[in-house]
Amino acid sequence: MALLLWLIVSPIPLGLAPARSLYAEGPSLLLSAPTIDSPPDLTFENNTRGKTINWNATDPSPKNYTISRNGTTFVSMSWSGIPISVALDHLYTQNLVTVLPITFVFTCTVFNTKNESASDSVNVFILPDETAPVIVAPDNFSYEAGSFDHFIKWNITEPNPDFYNITRTSNDTTSTFAKIASGSWDGGNISIRVDGLNATRWYLYCLFVNDTLGHNSTSYVNVTVFADVTPPTVTSPDDIALEYGKRGLKLQWTVYDSNPKNYSILAFIQFFNGSYGNTTDSRYHTPQNITQPDWTLHNAAGDPLWVTLDFLYVGNYTFTILLFDKFARSTNDTVQVRVYPDIRSPEVNATSDYSYEEGHTGNKVNWTIDETNPRSYNMTRNGTLLMAGAWRGENFSISADRLAVGVYVYNLTLVDFFFQTTISIVTVTVTPDAHPPHVAQVRVLQSFRDPGLTNLTVQAYVSDLNNVSQVVVYWGTDPSNPVSKNMTQAWGALYTANLGAYPVGVQVWYRVVGYDNSSVRNSFASEWTYVTVVSHVEPDPQGLIGAALGSVGILALLVVLSIYFRTRTR
Image 1 (cartoon, helix red, strand yellow):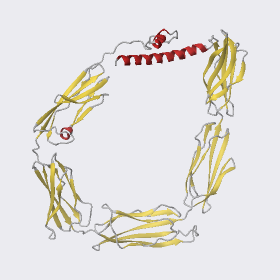
Image 2 (image 1 turned 45 degrees about the horizontal axis):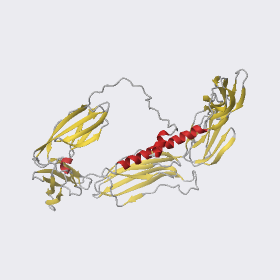
Image 3 (image 1 turned 60 degrees about the vertical axis):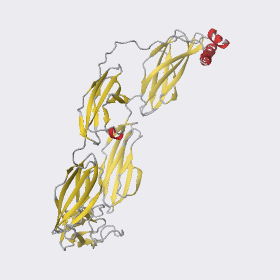
Image 4 (image 1 turned 90 degrees about the horizontal axis):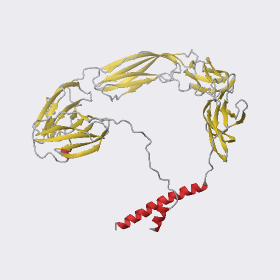
């Protein structure tokens, strides 16, 4: 208690004062009650899944909502004004459907921050399942023997699925009746593949489904298979002409047959010149024949077959594809391919001539080039070599940033294998910096020096695209006769300078001038501004100690009071 008494009568000021609001009271806003829509009542058969109730409620200041079921609240959550939903599958997962028919009343109540509310109720009627499964079947269809990717898909709706069975009846003497599939049914759609059936036969597929209450449905789909009486099919691509050395081109057909057997691609050489071009490159050749004795189709819509046209000699070639099916039916297609000499120099699409102001970045010179037989390149700027060497056909790009003011001529010379040459020239002009530095937030900081004297420190933020070369502060009691000094960079764009100590009451004028690092050394000067020197009190060490002791006293008081009241309750 002595410590408690000392804390209470202690002369150390605790600095406690009544708190005041920083905001004035304004006129009150009257909120209107929330609004909520009324979804329709629901009626469905027992065990139907995926049903929901969705309420749309609005209020400018939403707070929370509750949902009750038959008068008992089972959902209570905060509300941000978004739509509210309740899924009805919980009626089954929680075994709440005990008799049939049964009715549930769901009530949603929304509240705003004034505790005003709005409610809506939805009746949910659950009836016994008295409906057989609903089947939507595809139409009867036919296909050519040997073709594939044929399916029968039944779309089925049933809340209480149990069992399914698929049988097939046919005029095929090898299989007049067959059980295709059967088993437990989860209520999903049912699909079966019907490929590989015999030609000139019909097949009647029967789907039987029942539910757990004994209701059942049946659906029939007839599939007719007709004989393959058509030859293979093949597309007919256009004739092709390409430059010697061109890469990546191919001659491609799309082929199809229900019963493929084999194919051949025959290359007939009308003319070729093996002495033209790069004769030391062993990859160059005349086209070869291709034979595939076991042709298998992988895609029901047809497969691509192709011949690459890379590295063909200059010449004229005829390509003929021959396709045969298992019934000796055939088809063919012929395409003419001409490889002509490279008689053009490299084709270049270059950046247009342009200019930019010194200091700006992101400047490039780009060359996009088309050439089938590249040899070498050479790039200069104002006659000075930048790069050169063997060229493999790649495009070029070079940065034009950080150049001094002037005119720069970029010259790219490209030579192909046949010494055909292209010269591309791009001129980049760098203009002088036309923008002065940015000088902002110029202000003076005052601090205690001696009784009657105050220290002045000026600070400013100075920046420029070409960097800052110098920042000078001018100041004095007479702006017509100022003194000056360089400011020091503190960090980033912040510059500071100490102006010295001045008597209280004196007006000190000042301005800041920033210079950039451009070729023209642009400058910007802030307006002349004055500051009146004010008195500053010397920091009181005892006051600081007293404040610290006051804080300790408050903490001690709280500890003692806590111990005191704890012991009184025992």
